[in-house]
Image (tube, rainbow, N blue to C red; front, side, top):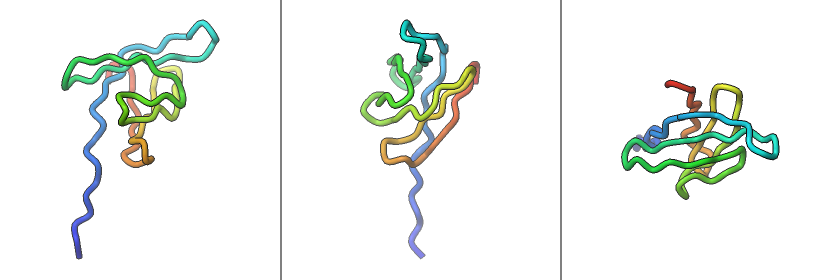
Length: 77
């Protein structure tokens, strides 16, 4: 059988979670590969590659745009 290629793990790091001015939580994410930082809310597209599915109190759920590779990032993780 052909080998199924899974997407590589999402390498983003969760730096902080803040309550935005509109009351929605904002996640500050960092790409350790190039040092880029992103501020994202639920539904945000990050770096043209990832989608933020959920911003909780201490974690963020992200996936690739096509819904694969879902990963939960935790503060300090």
